[in-house]
Length: 216
Image 1: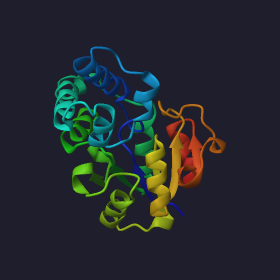
Image 2: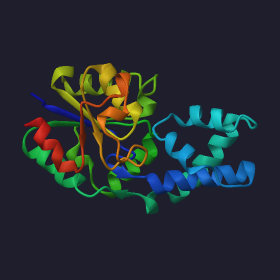
Image 3: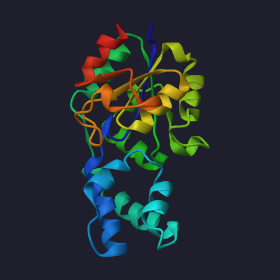
Image 4: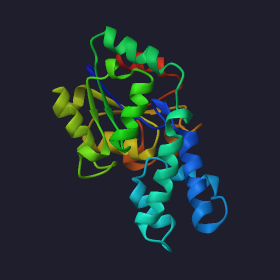
């Protein structure tokens, strides 16, 4: 029986797709003078920023590309982000049924907290773990292990909801139930047959409230 749900942040709870794409394009234009390929940008969703920048812009020091991205991102973030429809309803339902809830994100703490504060989501979450709280990024299961430890939860009773292959692999590596959201920008329209290995989700849902059918 599932008694714990851990949410990813970007692309799962919060629609940060627009600001992430804008920040990538700003960085491409600053460094190379033109927009980047959209398929490539979407494919980077969920990756640690340092990894993405190091591989995408090897011609400049990684600190430079990260600064260009983050300075733009920080200035536009608050006014650009939006909750995905149905997220508050799902979180409220989970709380009303006594399900423990956590957040495990590869995002920095400052912008994570800005987003949660903007939409008053702290009241629905029992624990928050950001990339700054762990040593290893997804798909390593460390961030989920930390969440479960703080929530006093076991893998067999825990479910993770995410929007990227890294989220699903993280969940599977941690031995928890993995759920891919159907509103993923990077993986929209995918079915289980489109994935292999530890990136195969246990479930795919179309709307947030559909998660309750899995839990029950």
